[in-house]
Length: 633
Image (tube, helix red, strand yellow):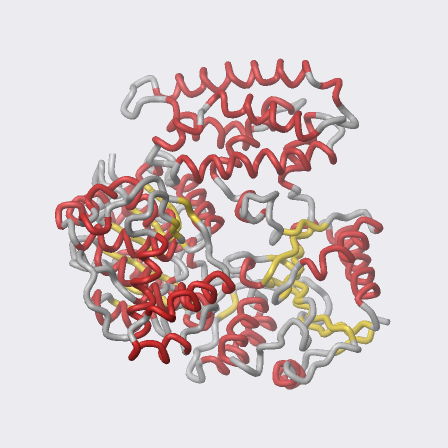
């Protein structure tokens, strides 16, 4: 039974500010919100409002598009927690997953000249590979284009050049060197190739072509998704934006985009200079701005505002809704003599603060501008000496090209590890049961079956019992697993016996292809192998896999959308921030993202023998804000 719109109240939070209420009830709209304003929470509440009031009528669905899988998973989880009876109609995925889904399902609608020659392979061309391609094709280029080819930057050819050319049903005669190079790229990688090679920029362009040449499919998508959300909209690329406009820009779907212009840090990947202005022009959306900051203390909000004004002089200062209890300066600069001293002092400080405050290690974060591997070894060793662990979220899991942060948030991996937790636990695991049951319910039971709930309970309970027996049979392999690779492979086989890769790929609730799901399962197996070397029993394997009790280490880019009580921004120096003077605006946006992750404390570090010339401007602003510098040895 639907709730009347004027009687609906927010779920799971105390309330919404006036602008959020207005945006929640609006039609097509853009919502600008600074860090900590609750952008994801706003979208979850809008989804609950639309679903519970019946404004989004059954069987219509809401499509939410995010840039990172972790963000898509987070939004998906928020809606499930707030509206469990309706959440199967909330589809949350990344831009890449959505466009890939279009190509995988509807490639038969491609014009004849663009028909797939066979199953495609995903590959991300390196700068060297693109440079080699440009060198190879240059001698065959029309003479007027040859000079222009030399001016194409291999580092940005895919993100900025290939992405900017929409595909036509028939290849036109090129008029510029860039256009000629793009079409040659398609010819060598895709057209008439037995096994085409695509990256997600090319997949996006193919999906856009499918939509533009199939009015019927476009109408079906609009009818299926009359409400569309886009998170972190400021990072939308030209290719992503034109695809969004081509699919949902005709007014048949209400589109809500949220983001923060000051956090546009994907310019290197082709993010539009001002996606909000493009949206306002093309979608005629109503605009709203949220003013509250529900994450950071007033002192940190004031510091953030100082840098926000560098990016946008007319930026309004947010209003902090947080009270501090840190007891010392909210922001500090720590200076060290060596990287070894830096790692040891930080580890000792966090260990002492955990003991004194009762916080969890996961309440702290170690952020770097780039090259996480340069920090990981020393930090790992120092933290272990102080009884803590560091989890490198930027690390690739095996040769899967899946980053650890991505895997730990992945729907498939989380299901498999929930099964391990349930079967290996000594006591009850209600959170794992809730998650696994929900996934099993929608992956194994036919939609609309009146026995849905009981069937899912029975299926899961029966399987967990069988898996527990299997684990018991192999318990003797602990505490020192002789062959973790073999045991991980056998365990993965047992886990995918409940729900096969094929079954998952058929579900609309797992918006990925069979190959992509296999890649995640393989990455899960590799991570399980590592977890088995650190666990002394089956009951510890799931915890070793997730490492929720570790301090996360990641790039600032990967921290986007996350928040922590205390943030260490490591290496604020010329080595990490070497490009700051080259592109100060974009670099300052990255810096702004980093400092806005902290709720109560923000600590910048540098080693004294590394130069600070290129980041002098950042230190000048910190000093002007009264941020003290401490010499810690």
